[in-house]
Length: 108
Length: 117
Image 1 (cartoon, chains in turn red, yellow):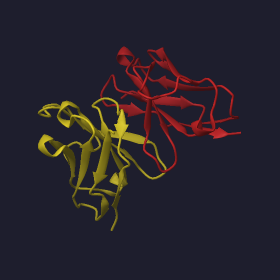
Image 2 (cartoon, chains in turn green, cyan; image 1 turned 135 degrees about the horizontal axis):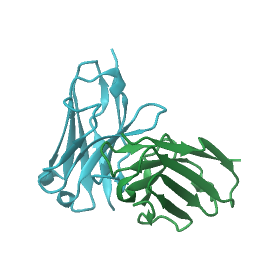
Image 3 (spheres, each protein chain N blue to C red; image 1 turned 180 degrees about the vertical axis):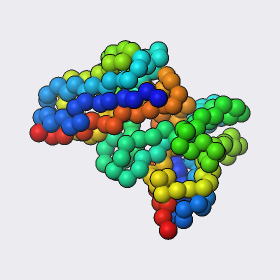
């Protein structure tokens, strides 16, 4: 099973700042089959990125994904108030599909 | 508008059964896979099960539910199902339905399953 480790666990930033979230895999993720989701309290996850770097429909271009093999990054170029949430990465290249434990992006 | 609406959650005793439903609208349901993802209270996400589109000939189950849960679909009703048997307290979670086999591009609001005596 591929274990995804997200860092940091909590990230405290202010609106307008740049956020960099990391997702490290215990082994190579096949074909960069990695997705990123945003989840706000009491809501379902929302797909942001798939295929490591492709933005999902309707996702603002301040969200970008990069990386390959074992190291992946989600970058939010300029934080908006609505971006403060928990972010999860998920790999779907190897069974079982697994999620990271999440990064809590909070307002500083 | 693409929507997924889960139902069927509730309180069940250990060892009991429950069937969850996921009603889809706003897209050609038969063409797309659907999946179930769960989230235990104050915990992270776990991908539980997936079924391919059309005839649903391809399925996926997490090891934690294999042999106990069964995913199915009825394209005439635009609905997918998750039959859950031999439930244990570890199955307590919000269960989300998602569109897609490998990742979810649309999610329902979730239905809470509580397994407790």
